[in-house]
Amino acid sequence: MGLVLKNVLKRLFVKGLRRVGRVVGVCMSQRKIDPKRNVGRGFLKRGYGLVGDSHAGTEKEVSLLAIESILRLHQETGIFAESGAFAENLTTEGIDLISLPIGSRLKVGDAELKVIQIGKDPSQAHTYNYQGYSILPKEGIFCKVIESGEVKIGDPIKIIDD
Image (cartoon, rainbow, N blue to C red; front, side, top):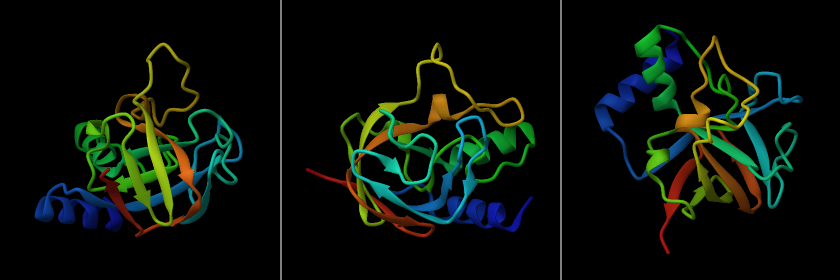
């Protein structure tokens, strides 16, 4: 098990889930069929998505997946996966993403996102899986960028209350 994974597990079991989380991966790929790589930082552009990513400019501008989902899969199957392995743009820690209502707003680094979809209809094609597993359609969320800004590993993620 990698050092990063061990540190995340230690923090999760000590602190538990909270309302304010953080970014643990900023991931992109040039083509939709390629795995995303954790590049550490990026720019979220309003009405577009993560600049440089193959999914930018689509209806689902940015995808988020919790590291907790990746760790649960690791515990169940033994596979080791890094941020981006499941085609997510942002890997998060500390926020229960799938419990957020549609329309929720998140401050992520300097950007603001609005949740537009929880999970993905299983009948819709999903172009990428990792070692036969695809968890983004079940445990990920999709957002629109409503305020542009830079995002990087370590940035806080805050739920914005109206």
